Image (cartoon, rainbow, N blue to C red; front, side, top):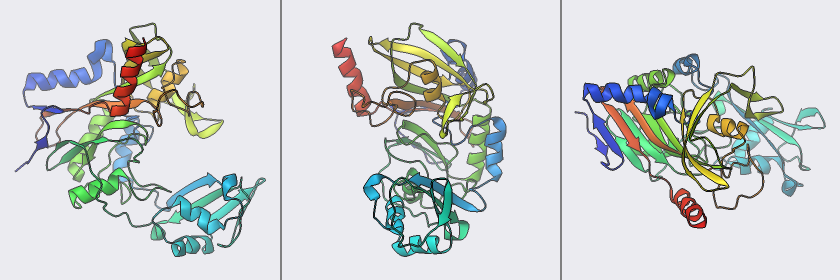
Length: 374
């Protein structure tokens, strides 16, 4: 039996062939000439061409392990290196950190040279620390009783409304407090295993500071089906965002390739040698210095909405990576971006399911403030 849990206010299900056909067509052609929703930048976990998504079905995390790096801040000057790393990996014991260091899995780079160190080595501040976690030393990912805002659930899939400041899946430096830790507890181990031990159930992701809908797959068959729909761009994905400046056009399409920023490998940028990326934008309301928009993505490149809107000189409010680094005039805690609508064909029943994640309170408050000031 396929038990379903959903809110009638936030979800709708149909098996009407006409409705399904129209909805699927709308996923790529809605919003007058296909205004697609936010790139499952929903920030989809990688730069997703069809090949990227389908290849992920046979790959888990790096076969050799996991890795991350960070720059030591001046406030840590004089502290032991094992303590500095321990602060970056909450929940891991100091003995675990010491073993990583003693086994040569930590290097410290300064002035162009990199070397291994002892656990007791003091740091100066400004050094770059590189940490490698071999598969045999990857920390256990444990279920955690973290409340979930569930938009839809049945035996195969789960759709949740992710809050701000929550990482979707464990990664180097973030092994607790993630969405995966929460769904492991909720689903009691019933999650797809295609993406490996660090990403059970995860077929796509949204950024830590982006809120809204995300699909969790409870088994491998569901995972393959949703991944295929992502690859074919047939999933309905609509985002809401507040951007800086007054967008003159009522609707616009940004068709610009996106790749790694050559000056900062942690960022993406519009580049002629990047991957094909298309974002459709529709203005919902103008507030003079700000514009409230709906975005739909035709493709799913990393940070696509943020990169495209910044390229258009309308960066997202609160986006200090691609926009202004000055403190925004509103309490956004990161970019003002919300994955509102998510529609897909159920992997087992063939029904069309559409969920809507309500705007978070901070987003509503900003809109009220802008409306009262305009």
